[in-house]
Image (cartoon, rainbow over all chains, first blue to last red; front, side):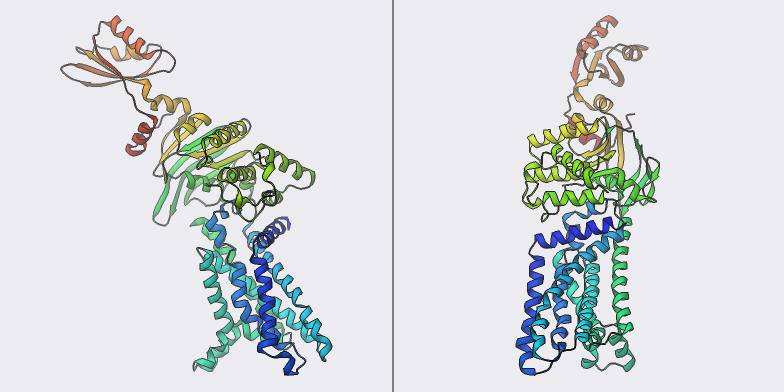
Length: 241
Length: 316
């Protein structure tokens, strides 16, 4: 049942770790979030016992890093012609899509684990709320999952990696920042409400505050599945093309 | 075993395959021959369910390729054109992935992997990234991937393109060996390859079948040395053509134009005997004077060009 899914996930992970991509992703994420925390936000000088600042940089970092992770996904398979092998193996399309998704997600989980020393190290400095921290991690995971799903979908449409990366960044940028358009443009209230509701950032913000709202949870899960579903559709429809 | 019925495949406005039908029996090595863009790869992609045909039906042991692609794929080993590989994966990692999704595990997996690696002589490079291997070895990795699960049917898209002459001979030997117990479909644009390896040939051009038959049949109709153009003095006698056709060693006689010098016959001869002698003896016996006797020498390439450019006839 999960044999193929597992095999595809492992293959993806091996591809990540046999190339510099996994390491670049991990190092870049750890460095950029920490630099932001200690240098730009002056965490130590701010004198606030909260990691909100740390996690609020994640959406921005994800915009550039997640497409780097997913850009190869389908675009490279097609360019190298390996999709011809992959799609003629007895694997169902959704196992392929999910396998690629879980491959990238595993890497994300790993990097989130690697960030744990940061709060762990800072915890003795003040009275931090562990519940809020848990919410923030859950939020980061969900945000990342949605970003990966969007990135893979973009990759399934792109002709090559560069294309895939650039459109991935654009798509994530749009999805993340959509809600902020109201600060720049004079939008009708209803429209800005809608834009807010479909933007990633809006839902992530409540997680950062430590609030786990079922609507936010549902939003991320639905969005993730929606793009995975579209991805599968693109792959299977191409067989008729 | 494999039935292809009236298959058409279009990519947008381009019709890559037009109304192609053929069947392949178990244990045959079938060659798809044609120039680039003839539709060979498209047919193979349809057989492996990479693409679905626009219309028509493909069945494999009675299983429909569109309705049940997973079942079909399980029975097939496929080497796509130019043997695509994951450059970053090691040979062992790649083959292990293939083995897993082919449903092999434990002892059986180890055993099958070992055999495929041996058969393709990959032992030395198991722990190298595929990306650093030469073209020939990548091809072997692709082949190992295709034969790993011991499928009944092997589909090889231009398996020898880009290899050096020694590698070509090796791969052909390997294919012939595999063909002893498996059904093999291979595509090529090299005529000699078909002669060297295949039992049956399908000649394609522009998406349609031009000729189909065993290698012997195709050879007979295509090999230039075996067609003689005979110019005889006088007028053709009644039944002369039929009489000649009944001689042993003569396959077919075409009466061509008659001129004031005489008349011309085009005789297709069997291989083996000395065809010139048969024709000479016949003419002497019948009292014809031979003005000229010319073997119609066309290289294989010429015939192929002729067939693919002018269109041909079904051989069988």
